[in-house]
Amino acid sequence: MKEQLNRIEGSAKKELSKISDPKRLEEFRVKFLGKKGELTQILKQMGKLSAEERPVIGQLANKVRSDIEAAVNRRREELKSAAEQMRLAAETLDVTMPGKMQKIGRSHPLDVTLEQVEEVFLGMGFDIVEGPEVETDHYCFEALNMPKHHPARDTQDTFYINENVLLRTQTSSVQIRTMEKMRPPIRIISPGRVYRSDAVDATHSPLFHQIEGLVIDKGITMADLKGTLELLMKRLYGEEARVRFRPHHFPYTEPSAEVDLMCFNCHGKGCSMCKQEGWVELLGSGMVHPKVLADCGIDPEVYSGFAFGIGLERITMGRYSINDMRLLYDNDMRFLEQF
Ligand code: DAH
Image 1 (cartoon, rainbow, N blue to C red):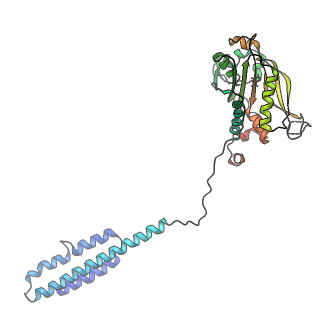
Image 2 (image 1 turned 180 degrees about the vertical axis):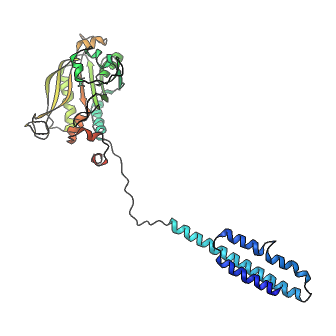
Image 3 (image 1 turned 90 degrees about the vertical axis):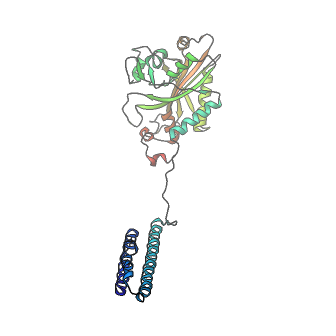
């Protein structure tokens, strides 16, 4: 029996040194120390021993048991701390490593310009209104004095949804919607998207943005239009900005004018940026046509007003010397980061 006990202790220690995971360790414990374990089996046979042998063997058996128990506990602690070491190593943070650059978003140049335009007009007491992009022929053309087959329609290649419904080609449609709803004095701007069936190139896009303006009151004259637009251009381009009004024709204004900005690059001399003109066309404007007023229920004998439509892309490109409109829509971070 003594031999048996010594053999068990020997093989237990040998086996234990090979165990490297906690599950196997528990199996080992049950195998040697459990109720059906080898040691217990031996102790059951103690009854067969003589009275002198019993205490000697009993003592030895207890020592073997407690030795194995202690060894198991030690091994368990070793495994636990090894696991802990591994976890710590895996979670180690090297705070001296360089960080990852996070890109910070910025306002799009079109938004920056629009916000500034809105600020100028809010400062002059204008309201900002919006109109639908899917529009009827009536608001986009008919009520603006452009009946079907009017030649001015040709200049605006229209996306028709059906005979009467279209994607608006100009924010001028909001003039009519506003005059139908509001009574003078009216002072609004209306920014938004417009659509034209144009091929994409450096100066054209099937989707672009306009800012419409409309002022109706008693005694409004062309001088108010000039003063308002000159102020806007000085705010956008600086005090040295020079604008000129050039006679033009729009069916919904009389008289009509296009407004040009003196080329910043050559100061009116002519260069490649202004196509040798010395001036860059910025917007269309005029005094609201009496027929348009009357059709909206506003008496042209009592009231007069001016209107204008600005291309947001155009004034943005001018401010930042952007020579290709496509840059504004490409979402190229290298471009957008510059603003
Ligand atoms: N709607 C014109 C365009 O898209 C711009 C314009 C011209 C707007 C004259 C106006 C205006 O309000 O009075 O080209």
